[in-house]
Image (cartoon, rainbow, N blue to C red; front, side, top):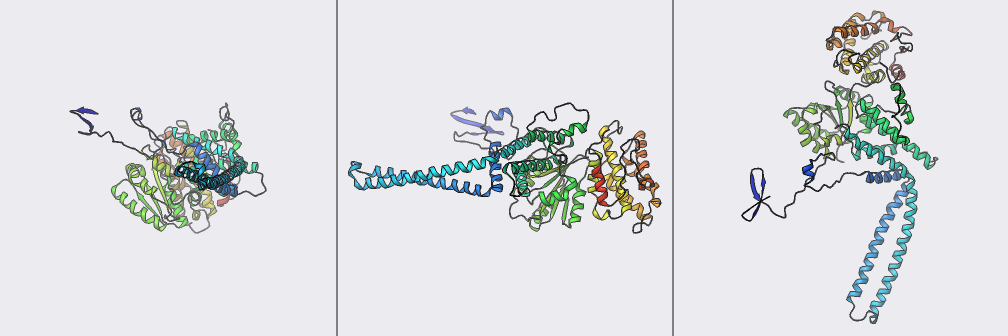
Length: 566
């Protein structure tokens, strides 16, 4: 502020204007993770309207009681309403009494009407006070019954605090209170009690289901390095043992066993791309977008397109990054919300300003009038420029190469359409391709020992290899005929995979030699023999299954070791 000739001036931009002492400015943001500089913090008063852990605990308790003991929640709500009405009635009686006293002229005792009116008011007041005392007693009983679910609500609060703390690890980990409350609602809806369980047993069942659902939904939005950390923290909360994960172990398997307290089949990898159809149909809603975040070079839009074809959904895909794309996206988005179609916005990391200024507002405008079949998918590379408001509105799946041969094979096999998995001979070839692709991907984790360079092998390479195998079989005239394993075009398959599909990314001769050995060993007629070992140098080498139906292949993949040593 500057004072000149009795005037108080303030400089805004390049101009000086008069300053009024009545001036006030209020700034608001929907970003709870906003970082304000120290000089700004010293000049403003901060008011935080975001959800606190205590308020979320109260909301969680109310939701659990409403689902498990609806009669208690109804009684509690009616008592709260009754208490409010009684307090209002008591206040009105007090006001009437004061009004009579103030209107009295002379001595109060000399006015018989005032004395009689006071007696009536005092009698009514004592009755109201008795009612309030009785309702307080009933409310205390209700609170004692509700407090049995208090341990579960405390766990909900601790889980929410953990989710909020994840934002300190990565800009991508933004989980809102609405996301967490939706998880609780789904757990309560799916975990219906039998009616014969005790309350302690019921709370134990809900606790286990809650941790499993949080692990499945949150872990899919984490990078592979952070999933084990998250699972370890969940195990600590589940058991109350802060020592889990802190002891020295000899192998990765021993470390993972430490958080097996959550169950051997605990979904610590998250429910993600392998179950994309389940996620889309059961966990997403018309107002919750699905953000598929990937590393540079990985394109997962094909997964969404294949799912739309299988479900016979109308999917409009728009490549973002240009002004024409923005206009097209806005018009298709508006139309799809009314018709119930699907919309996919691709490469949204190229238009972060449009996402922040326009698209987030459109998502926030979605409500009850949105068609229930509407879905919106967003693909983007990981970028710190992605707006926080979008991250908090979306359900996020981080698409990256899964850790371990078994996980990589499971994800790839889940991407193959149903129509392709009808021929047993082709299924065997697809299984061999899945194994080869998984081994190639796994070796990337051990650069420079696995490969001398970090080549950009992606799932798109394996999907292209599927088309190559189908085309080569079609050229030999075997598309409809019963295929003979001995007569398959093995040389052509091996050569194309070595030199074109996978070999096209390899630049070093030593890596090309390794790739040639992998492909040449796997794609041979002997793989159709019984007891064919994929890794003969290892005593407990995986042996290909006898049958090659889709179900048998999936079962065999699930039987592989979850963790692959170097």
